[in-house]
Image (cartoon, rainbow, N blue to C red):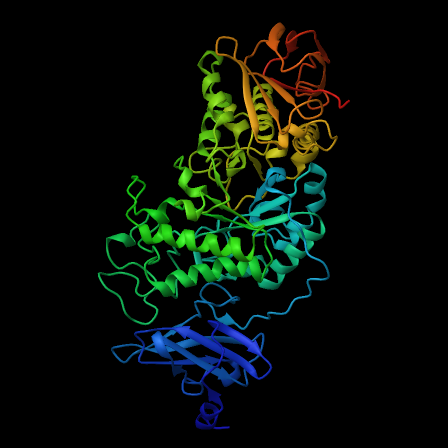
Length: 601
């Protein structure tokens, strides 16, 4: 068949979806390239002949074609004739699969057997999030090189299930440059990282996660693209001021801490590009939420408090409004870190509409309280503020944590390593790191831990060092402590319902003694009210006077000093307390937490 005959079989598509859309008569291709003089699609289906499948110009700078010979699994690219008459070859900006970041687009298979029934994610007040990095989480057995695959994460679902985790948050999995990366350098935002297994592997991952009872949240990056391996850079040949062309700002607004690659949030086609991507994860992959990286640089050019990207803020409002309308149970999380109620306020009230946000008002004072060497320098007032902080009066509009990928890298390390770089065997490292974890699970908010935190993973996070799973056995007592804390947080014994509730009251703050106590409750009363007491001092406190919310027997539900958690712990004998009126004397070991509640009835 001649090239002319091939071209005659290529007709403008009637489908409006951008990218490659398989259908019964072949594949529909559609792309936005407003400055191109001509566009063709080439691939294995036409022997990569540049004149075999020209695309027809549509209104608004779009180009489209139906190619009958194309099918699922075919590799393809676009050839664009630019203003000066030269031809450039580009990967489809909407490609859902690529061979690699500098390879070819692939016509992805939209079909997948999801099975019967729909997964229902936990209520936000009952979520316990586990953040992980696919490439390092679980090195594939028998394979020395990283990155690990999505399937290798699935192999550890049993551990996460036993731990009590019910929500998995994966660091970015959109195709990035190279094979080793944190993922915050997206080259192709619609394609699942090929080194992790690609789109089919991620669909299987989500299906397996849901079958195991885990919700899935995906980390997405819209504050910048790249900066390397970007085929959308000067996609159709046009640019200004040494900028990136149609997908990017081409003036002073292009600059970010990661390069001059900020998307143009004021251009409708770019807004739709980002909106379509967010909806793809929730629709095509059935994930249960999105964590949006550094929204501060979407709503402002620099981290200086100037709201000089209002179009970025309105884009966030638009995306969150569409998600709420089409996926009302999905949780969107902002990383903004500016103590701003606006991020989690509803769009109709002038907010960005996120469901929750990472709370730097918790993580920084809590880490400081346990990492500081001298007891006299720990601030219980700062800890009290961290416990009570909230956005728009809602305790669950914040995600609280003592470790995240950011907190354990970039010059900082895991909490045990920050306390004592000599290793997690150190008494103080174990004691004070678990004190921070206890606050994560007992303070109001959505709790999150980072991979390996539950078995004292040390040093700092890197994308070329796998999690050391041998430590799970070495520190199995610490794993049990995390499990016990999570069970209390989720009210597994129906005795600590208050830890899922909105309400908190600071009962006691003593900076001199380094003791703090607070009450949590949902509706109040036995089985609901929870009293949490923490000692941030190297000395035990004996006969320490505290006021409890009500008289009666308060049962000890957890003592973090139990020797069953670590041979390094003292095993300070502590039991239930009898409160005659409100005040009672308690004993608490060094650097320990006690959790009390009353039996129902």
